[in-house]
Amino acid sequence: MRVLVIGSGGREHALLLGLKRDPSVRELHAAPGNAGTASVATNHAVDVASTDAVVALAREIAADLVVVGPEVPLVLGVADALRAAGIDVFGPSAQAAQIEGSKAFAKDVMAAAGVRTARAEIVDNPAELDAALDRFGPTWVVKDDGLAAGKGVVVTPDRVAARAHAADCLENGHPVLLESFLSGPEVSLFCLVDGDTVVPLLPAQDHKRVGDGDLGPNTGGMGAYTPLPWLPDAMVARIVDEVCKPVAAELVKRGTPFNGLLYAGLAVDEEGPAVVEFNCRFGDPETQAVLDLLESPLGEALAATARGTLADLPPLRWHDGAAVVVVLAAENYPGRPRTGDVISGASAEGVLHAGTAINDKGDVVSSGGRVLSIVGRGADLAAARAQAYERLAGVKLTGSHFRTDIGKAAEEGRISL
Ligand code: GLY
Image (cartoon, rainbow, N blue to C red; front, side, top):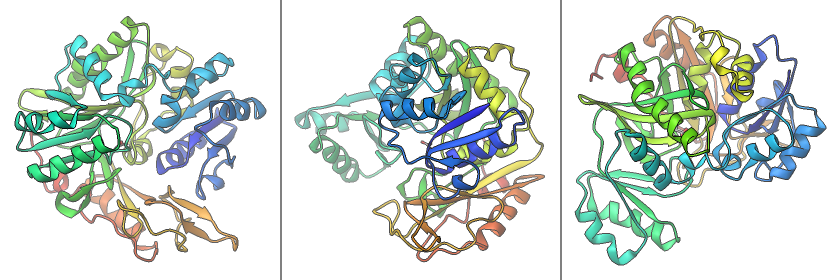
C-alpha cells in the first residue's frame, strides 16, 4: 500500500511510524509533515485545508489510502472530496465530523442516543451570560463552541475567570457552551468506527494542564499514558456499549455514518462513564503512546476501516506493558511560543516530532508550541515513565518545558474510581 498521512504533529509522526512497521505498507507520504516525518516519509508542502490540493496530491502519488490526522481538514470536507475521487480515506465526512466541529451537534446526537454527558447550555447573547453562569458552577466549564484544539476550554472554580473566557469568546463572535462539571478521572478511548462497527483501542489518559499537579492553563495535551491500571477491563466494554456504539448507530440513523477514529473523552465516576467531548480523529498526544503498544498491523486496521470491512478485521493484538508520552513544549506555550531554536537529540529513538522544521543550515529547529513527544515503553508504568524521562534528558531546546508527573498519580496508585 502507498499511504498518505495528512497533518504535521506528533500524532502524525506516530501514525507514520506505526504504518512503517506494517509489511503491507511499502511507501509513505506526509502532507505537510515535519522535520521528523521526513525521515519516515516523503513530505509534501501542501495546504491541507485545501481539499482540492489534498485530492490532487493523493492522485499524483496514486495513494491507496489517505489517513487524515487533524480535525480541520475533516470538518472542511477533505474526506468527502477524496471519497468522491474514488480514493480510500480514513476519516469521517464533514457532516459526521460535526461530532467534534459543533459541540451543539454532539449534544444533540448524545441526547438522541441516550448517552450520559454534562448538562449544557449554549450562550450566544452577552446579555444572557450572567444569568446562565448563575445556573452553573462552581466549578465552571466554559467552552468555545468551535474547533479550538483543546485550548478553548476553561475549567475553573473562579466565576470571574469563567466569565472573562466566555466574554472573550462572545466578543470574537463565537457562541459559548456552559457545562456542568463532571468529576471523576478522565479517560480517552479511541475507537475505529465503520458505520455501526466499533473496535476500541487501549484506553489512555491525557494531561491537559500545562503544569505539574494539573496546575495552570489548558493545553493541547502535555503527556499521556496507556493502559490505565486503575480502569477495570469491563469499563472499556461498558464505554463501547453505552457511549460509542449508540453514537455510531445514531449517526448511521441520521444518514451520516462515521468512518474513521471516534475519540470519546470521558469522565468516569460511580455512575459509570459520562462524555466530556467527542473528537473525530486520533488524539494528540495519546496516540503516540497507544500506537506504541499496537502489535497488529496498523495499515491493515486503518484500510479495513476506510474500506468498510472493519467487521472482518481480526481482533487487535497489543504488546504487554505500558507506554508513556511526555510532551516537550516551547518557551511560553500555551501562549505564543518561542520558535526558531536549534534542538539537539531530536533524532533519538522514541523522540517524535510535532512543531519542528529544518532551517537553512540543515538544523532541526522548533517551529510550534508542542515541539516533541518523547515516548517510553516498559513492563509497567514505572518502567515506561523511567524510559520516557531518560530519553527526554537527551534532548536540549532552549527555554523548553515539560511536565515531570506524566502517569505519576497512576503509578503511585492515587487514581481510583
Ligand atoms: N488529547 C487532546 C486532543 O487530542 O484533543
